[in-house]
Image (cartoon, rainbow, N blue to C red; front, side, top):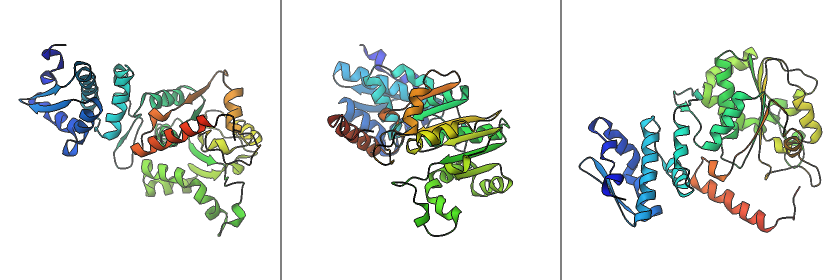
Length: 330
């Protein structure tokens, strides 16, 4: 590999100098992470990034920097999550896939922040949501299953594709024990629905959310409230679906009305149902696998977009579960 192939001078002109700042990160933390992961040295000199180290390490580091430049050129703020994700793609020879992540703003939050998929898995998930009538998204904590689904719902509502957003989840905490919580019914179910409220507040702002709630355009309710209803012209999200029973899942799926879309999210490694009770989510994934109009997306540890420690924790539990294969599974 000759020097011209690793030089990034052509990528960083005076008018795009902010890209270099973006890639380096606060206190050069992004470049330090690249240097550490690939055992290379990166310096910014005379309008070019100079990468030095063993030939293969240098080649991989340059691929990572090129991928980060691609993200930065499309307005993406580069942080630790982006850098670690790109490093993973480069190590697996998939760095060219990074171009698939450019553009594709799903929704604008109440504070004007663009919300878009941050990983290939998330992009495939959102593509399924937009394409299919029903999408089942499963994966570990931090993969954006619920957040992106709410963003898609808000955008569909803003575009007048639907008249209502309905968010629901089973009220399960080692069995349904709402009666032990203080207050009226709303205050009893609120703790279970808090993550859904938080996502809606972020997309709409508290004031707009309250206005739509009072008008009936937004409904946040426990799954039991869905029984006996037909939901037309609605974007319906069932969260924490791993805690549904077979009967609950079938009941929910058959609520689908004309002009509606359903997204079901869950993590099959976090089932809180009583021992021996099968998860409705697992059964739905099996039964509906090849049904037209239904998409099933499985996100992985690589799609975790929270703090890097979340990914490490998920991986540690996964390794432990693999060692115990056949024990305590449902």
